[in-house]
Length: 90
Image: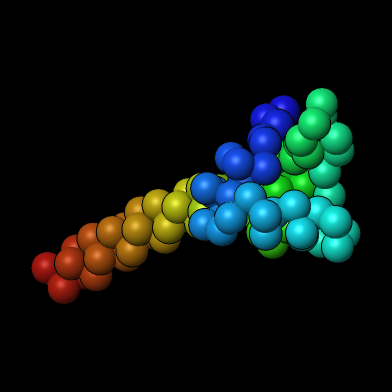
């Protein structure tokens, strides 16, 4: 699991380290104290940013399923086209 400093998080979200610390102190960004500075896990940063890594995996799974179904549809359409061409030739 990736762990970030407040400086790294500030660069990721495009704000100052003071703002990151303020967000932590307000309870909006969950962090733990690591030495003299706060540390933020990837999971907590994703939550703060409104990201859900599991959704990305689910999206990939669904896209693969759609692609497989599209291949079946394409094969069916090709077979139907062949059948129509054969019946017109008779």
